[in-house]
Image (cartoon, rainbow, N blue to C red; front, top):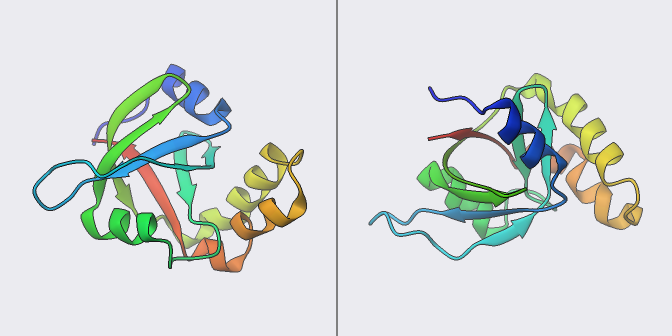
Length: 124
């Protein structure tokens, strides 16, 4: 398994937004979707606001692979469901990182429903 470099972790973690594209069955990338991103320790996570019904999340979960762009980093990645014990820390990261945004934007990525729509992102 490939890991993030410290520079990549810092740059992606500091980025306000991340662009994610999932791979189709034929390997072609779909269009990028802009979302928020959270770094917790040496890991990068993304969440679907309002739960697992968003199309990009369903495609990422189904394909397991894609590409991200954030903080000047562009990389092929894999998506995996994280361990359930990461969610309290991720909620705190999202609430702290995006504290300057209205609460109605932050709550949907830092609640119980969003925990069901969280992916661990690792370099492919």
